[in-house]
Length: 531
Image (tube, rainbow, N blue to C red):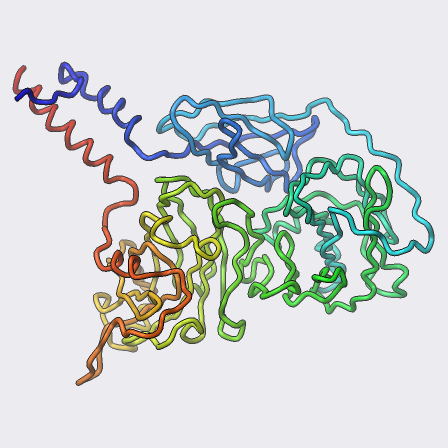
């Protein structure tokens, strides 16, 4: 029988062969970009979205957080394959520059320009009547108003627009004005369906307070929004090129300090249920609210509206059982590990690494710290409970083994708690509720422990309520780690429970890569013997 041979003639060609093979079999990696960004001849302002496309499909995006710069807070990461052409858009305007996707390329500095030399000519501002009749709501509506921020600092005032139609709307020449002091705000660009646009008095201050609000943010030209006096002085008008589109008298809502006025399901107005409001995400008065707006406090941010199960994530637990929560959004491409990092100090989970089995676009992950066992769980976790947490991925139906190849949850446990409870690091377990009982995940102690915390990693391929416990049964206790109960409507099934009993410890996405390297190493030794 003739033996199969690799196309590597001599030992000196092994490196080239390895490179060629890597290009074929390795999982898709990411190219990273950063640099200056110019729109209409001026440095792009804070809030502008820079996106990357391959073959007409968006493969990555980032928000400008420093005027005239992109990629400072985080690179513009682009998924692709070797040799593909990358195009860029600044908001909805195509940039002049392109790039080529390169295997294992380091971060690249690439200055982007779009619409240079073009100066938009705003349509003259229509003159509203002194006592306008109620406006007819169109496809784009005034959706939320923060007119009474905390204290005397009007810097944090903002107005949110929402496109509730199924078609993209051209905002070119639209104007927002009203009874507020200052000059008109002239709009531009395209507004896609089911998206938000925030007009902020100070975009920089807005992003500082709402770091996870990812919708487009532009400068509002008013001096201040009136929060005192008669309701006639609390009017906001939105004009298209053809006339008045929407008008709001926000004086009908006496919102408390630092609570916004929100449009409800009947086009009426109510005070927001959440302190700080909900910019860039669904209004809290429309349904089950998030635990907080996208402020720096709980880091519950505006959520991407990507395909494949993204969108906003609302907790199924009642707010009385929630201590802290944080939501992060990343781009999921098939086979490419995505890292979600959480910075809220109270959360025991600080990182979730997901390798998807599908390309799903932008997917959000939410981690919640609970006071007690989740209300979706039929029985408390066994052992000494350190923390109860929820981890939700995407919307209902996404976080199942068919979509998630593997995931690693990184968490920490206070050393003082282990000392008080007289337990060791080897006693620590992470449990996941599978719908009928608690499964103990395969896990290991991670490097980097310090005087305050010991760090761990747990492997899973489904998400639901979790518990961090110490496995120290009481004397005579008979422990059943998976107690049968009636089926639960959670996303997990028997398949995910079985998968968790034998998860892999290998680094996500590298099984094929290591196998290929082993084959090449054997070939290299064979060639050396012949020479």
